[in-house]
Length: 278
Image 1 (tube, helix red, strand yellow):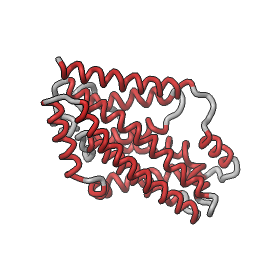
Image 2: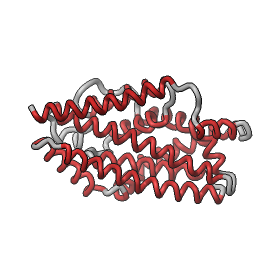
Image 3: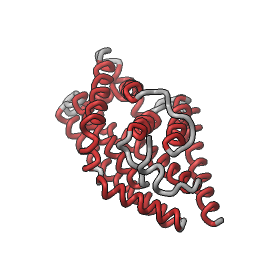
Image 4: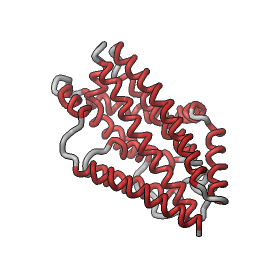
């Protein structure tokens, strides 16, 4: 009884938090400061810039998914971090407590803070030198590193094809705007239910998901990445990396925490969802 009450209370609290943010975003009609800056810059930049950025995103995803995930895993703490998360999940199943949930959260926040510092330094430094579009593979690597670290903090793997689709869905959710964010959240939840043993499998192949994610990323941040390519002034564009990574990290913490709580609520414990994803 105590376990069920604790898990349901946390899930309800997180759902209220997410709904508030989703509804606020869906009702938002005015762009934020970073978006306004991007729109102004876009008016003075070549039209082929979006196509170049989209191609760079697709190439970066392909390279990282095919060759770079072992390296991402190593820099993300690898097996040690995942084993720690899975063991914490097992203990949470045996004896539910807010302190153990908070320890998972602490690990996830620590990884996020470390990556934020690196991203700010890297993006600002390259912006000072006038490096914009070529920065995309580095930035994608940091995004995936952040997702893998946060997922591992809650006991989840990321190497399977299904979990890679989930990583892509988290990226899309974090950069979606307006009413599209509601649709993206529903899609992410459907993927989570499938990965954790419920619901139908997705119809979209990995390459299609990469293409869709790359298109969305290019449309959202190309102007700022191109601004980053202007020496000195590009520091402002590089700093936008931090905003993007922060939104991604917050989205991932919420969604991975929800997945872990639902698995525990359904009595699946630490094994399912952590190692047996499709």
